Length: 420
Ligand SMILES: Nc1ncnc2c1ncn2[C@@H]1O[C@H](COP(=O)(O)OP(=O)(O)OP(=O)(O)O)[C@@H](O)[C@H]1O
Ligand SMILES: [Mg+2]
Image 1 (cartoon, helix red, strand yellow):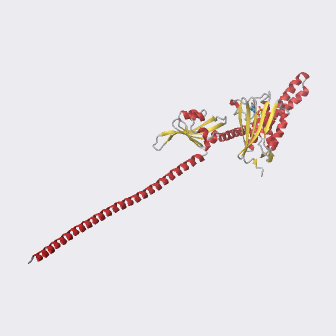
Image 2: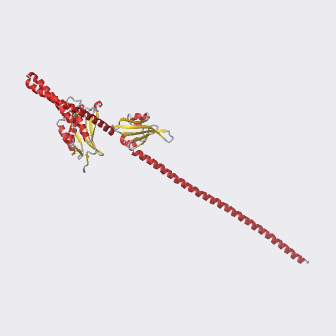
Image 3: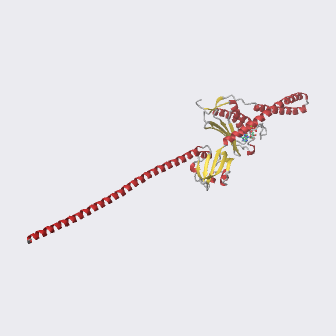
């Protein structure tokens, strides 16, 4: 082998070795790249997984949040509808409901309570019981009494007199611990007036029946005495005549009283007709004005208050009240007559500025023969009462040393609408 051949073999071998080296290097590079690609791919897959899981979690969380929101708003709706329902109940009950906190400040008060007390919500919320209530309810609340059922006379701050039925109890929460006090009260004024009118009516009818019999029996012996005095007056000598005349006079007085009483005891049988109250009042006032010296009579009666009543009886009732008012003001004064429309009812008030009726005799004045006057028979108000009751009405009295007011309430069945 010559040198040239050796050179070719060496070059070829060297070339082969180089190709092999390049081949291996390339293979290594390719394999490294593939591994890197695989690694990258794996990493990418992991990130995608994490991101997907994250999105999934987020959307689940959002869904839960939406569900929670829906639940919360449903719970809120329920709570507010329960609250509204409770509020509606409290506002709709006809009884007054007032709640106080531990310091006896008013926290809630319903419409009925405001109407009975004649106050507004703004005047009461946050105020203490002592600022709003008068005695004796004020003391009952202050003593934090527990009362299941009590009744009391009550004069509002405005001077309105009421008869109140009430219950007082501690106000408890769900634990239950005491968080304040609760007052529930009802205006029993009308009911009480109705009850006392009924009691009076019952007493009067028993009394009337009994004494009408006695009065009737008295008339016969009186007629006999009267007959004898007439004979005596003709037979006795002059000095005795005045005595016989005095006996006769007294018998006539007694006869008038018995006559009046029998009229009172007879059942009232009203003949109903349509009458204009203002016209009737005017004519009664005209009649009384002649005997009422130094007395100013003021009338506030809107025209066309029509009632269905017995005109003769009504005239008698109003005249008796006016007569009493005049007699209560010997030194002069004022009579105020007013008519008012209250819902279905009509109210007639006759107020005087006379000496008033002492409290201790107020429940006797409607009884027959009860009088404080020297020449009174005590039948005036008994007759008034009987007439008003026969019209299904009611009469009440309010009196102080500054004057007396009689109020007649005509019920809706007696009221005539202008259209009817
Ligand atoms: N307006 C009044 N002011 C003060 N007292 C009154 C008034 N009205 C009635 N009274 C009292 O009531 C009593 C009874 O009244 P009533 O009208 O029944 O009888 P009388 O007026 O005494 O007698 P009669 O009316 O039969 O003449 C009266 O005696 C009086 O004491
Ligand atoms: Mg009288």
